[in-house]
Length: 265
Image (cartoon, rainbow, N blue to C red; front, top):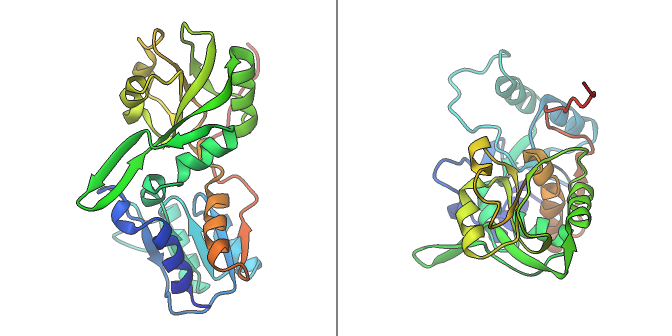
């Protein structure tokens, strides 16, 4: 099997034209004509990820976040991007990214989160189209029965596997209809209100966005990494549906550099 076969499978599910204009999904480094039998899946590309790929004989790394997002004018060792580029090339590792095209695809990132939460009748939060291409942003669905505040917050903490997260209460005491966006989703807040969601869950929300929604919906920011922690699992599912014989490895460690200090004062 060639790397280009794996890439084709990913792009059939999440075509590159679905990516946002600012994005750089697709091939990052390497040759797609090379053969592969083992793929490493991760959220971010770091030196540790590439070293793990080398140690486990994976010559293809598929990440959610592109390593090459902004321009690179030199390849030395002064930045993480430069060091990862050198390390990948020296070890013949091909790097590929499925980012906002996977966010915007039907049954993509936000749908995966909805599945983990146990939501039903999930649809796009915002429908989009470019010519004949139809896609969307975020997702919205509902629980079979409403949850009270304590049960809802406990579910969120459990699903996203986080000790702490930010949230703003709403006046409503029960939560049933939930809107979701993996990553930085505050741009969909008005859509969540328009669709009468009881809560909106995303990875990041700017401070000022928390104000003034208490009559409409709960706001929850669980962390960027935490909101997308199941993306490698989604990519694994996509690949395995077409190539069940290929070996896939989900990188077992967090790639988030963020830590939370929680000592009482």
